[in-house]
Image 1: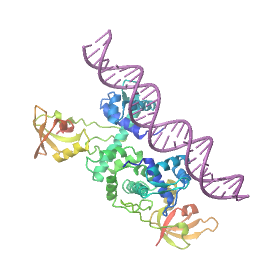
Image 2: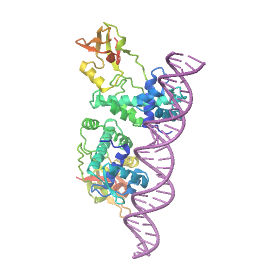
Image 3: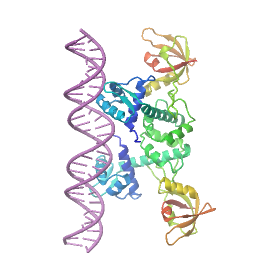
Image 4: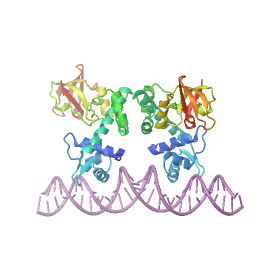
Length: 221
Length: 221
DNA sequence: AAAAAAATTTAGGTTTGCCTAAAAATATAT
DNA sequence: ATATATTTTTAGGCAAACCTAAATTTTTTT
């Protein structure tokens, strides 16, 4: 069985991310946007992945992962998230600094390495951004968090994760005191632009835009 | 300043290894052999590396690293050896299992990562095979060990490193009790085939062939 | 349902790193 | 010193992963 290339793995990972939890078809253009390539290049790769049995592809119809493609995608995601835990917990990186490095480390091919790393880290269930880590068999628990945009005034919630992993976004959260596990209380929502004022950990009031609310995953307590 | 590719880094590393401590010219054929490619492919790459100012190359004359090429090579070697320490010390791999994984990890590009890893490991000076680890500035102490073949009957030496990193060789040493730091006493040398009988740590006598002796680095005490 | 717009695929190229076969340069042997 | 052998380079190609431009299919609008 031939190895999948770095690039093939990235396509599978991206298809997984774009198809969401419900396994929707992913379009060529969406993939082109996410991989920062052109649609024509995506078409080339889709043909190759289909030949390898990793995706279901019918011309003009978009793609889904096959069982075997999903296995590969989840393995890459598992590695990415475990390495992020290592970088933050062991090496002392900030959560805003680890994404790009983990993008590289996730393609190191060695099952034994991943399992030893997992054990060394104490079998973590979530990465530093709150994303769940698939187990060795590819089981991924979906914790079904809510977006902060769904929370009513007066409610208190726990900050559990982020959708956007961009360094600038994470640094903004750091400056606002919004870390994983923080208690957030929605004090007020501005009807005009949906910006909100939020009490963080009971002692600090901050204002966040809709753009920020849309990227915060929270849990009712 | 453009990045060097995975392949370019491997050529530079190989040139460094083949030119030895004295910086001899490396031939096209030697590189082809070490990189498991054909001489014609090596010539292509040498032209490219010369254009980038990483090697001194004159047709038919062999190559040496430039200062800038040596810097790259030492950085790759530093990363390789630090990752090997991580794999053995932190993840619990055997010294015979880490070479191939480190071959991949050594190309992960991030200076901060390397420095944090180095600090996390406690700034190790040697890797699990006894090879010295270059510092961040590319300084590499040459510990000037001897080969076991240079040791006389009756002498006691410390086992400090290996030249061959092949898993089969290292496993053979494991079975013989020859680990880094072991005390080896040369009891007898067979005149005919230069095989030797050796007392390991004062309590176990083993026989080793010339092929093994030639790959053991030792130090007088 | 036709026309217009958008999405996707095909066709034909590029670069990187490899290949084989043939030519040229260097080294070795007589 | 010439012939032979070895080493190295050149020439021409191939596969992976990308590109642009043009053609085709699907979707949307009127």
